[in-house]
Image 1 (cartoon, rainbow, N blue to C red):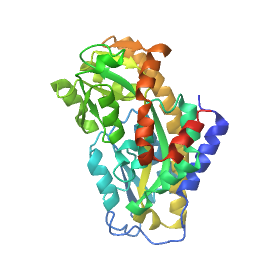
Image 2: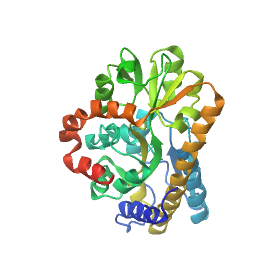
Image 3: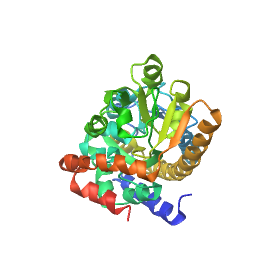
Image 4: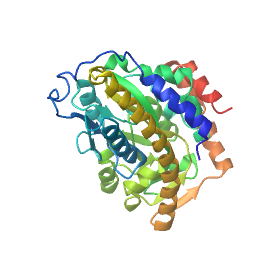
Length: 345
């Protein structure tokens, strides 16, 4: 479980990243929903693409509960899970436009705004959760978090999901040779394209909400995801094999529309930040608990053949993927890669 001292530091950073000029006392601008009338609550739409029973889904609901309590009903949070409001691409655009106030996209979804964010896709960059959390405390990650201000988005927090695993419907994936000729669903990003190309496999960028259908229809043979997403999205119904590789990360950045946040009165801004800090603590705990629970659920379900690769088997993949670090250093930056590697020490 997450070290309490580290958790305290991480939460402090979450708040530090979020605090900006808390001096505006105006109501939300017209770029969001209609301005609140006297006595009417300010509506905060929180859109995300995963189910409500995931770490992100549970934390979004916790944030709703906390903010409504702390503001005594002055703010009302409407949570829209499972792409009910917007899908992957749309939610980012709509958050920038102010039509939805908060989103928590996968880090990789922000590659178009800042290519450095692709550090998360470098294979085998982090050995464990502890290293990930330590990196989030680094100056390099603070700069990444603050880099979205110019896109009308304010970074509020980092939310973990977990390490990614490979699944497919053709054969067990135990060696790089097993990937040849297969096609995988992936998120957007040059690093992920290069990862599968190195393995001799094809890749296709498909929205998260459309992945199940793509697997079911054979549009792609496999995908990579966390235990919890594999479990809650029911990929075990359309995938036969799961290889436990922990080769990459799938984590989230919680973002709020800048104009909306800056238009809140100081006491409401503080309520948002305090609620997010508490929800972040809750999310971290849930991510670790649900990751383990989902692996056990998948094992007990018996629908997938699950193989945990040995250190020797993983070593073959690690050696094969090593050139990707040099290939993408200019894009991601030496500063970010070094900070991530140092977090493992």
